[in-house]
Length: 168
Length: 133
Image (tube, rainbow over all chains, first blue to last red):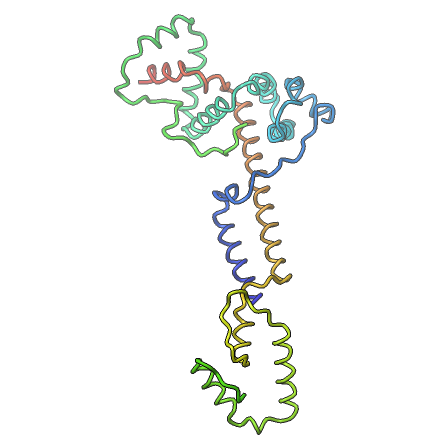
């Protein structure tokens, strides 16, 4: 009897495991996130890297703190120019809404998959676009023709990319 | 075994077979059978509303104890606990992986030479599509 019961449990566990990626959160309640350190508890190195977030840090939810601590852990292995870019963008990135961050990640994932030459075109075009006077950007927007031919380069993903389901 | 088996032909048939050669049972075997019967009867808990055979024979008791419903046994608790621990562990592992993946994406995105503003500027999307046709 117990053996049969055990076999049923093992079978159920195997089935649950195989479909875990879609069902885990349907079976169990959202796990309580382990507490993450407040600002004064960070190491000097973490404080230095995450300095742009100092004023907002204690208001971040645990999962968000955990993500930033993950970024801080990767930081020492980066090139100096990459570190500089992270430092300059960190604060503004943290101020975006979750939806904006999700949108940016989806587009980034799409652009990352493009061939290198197309990625290069996008970067050049961004520089060109940034240098345009505001009225010319608006003019382009107001007089944009109906999009008949497909664009050679686009940052808009054709369909939503499967990103992790917790945009923070 | 010579008790009546009211309304149960199968029980009567089994009883007849058991009665046949009843006298040839050894004393030791008889003692063990009696001890087993006493134990079964002592452990028997009739289920409320269940049909019982008024004959009170071994067959009736046997059926009662075997099908008396779901009895909780401590041994059943262990697999359940294991399953629960496995599910909780998998959930945390899944969340941990998602967090790591998110940190990876954000690290790459924020350290890229294309600033994140480019991904959020709808005008740039349109301008880029227009100028690349």
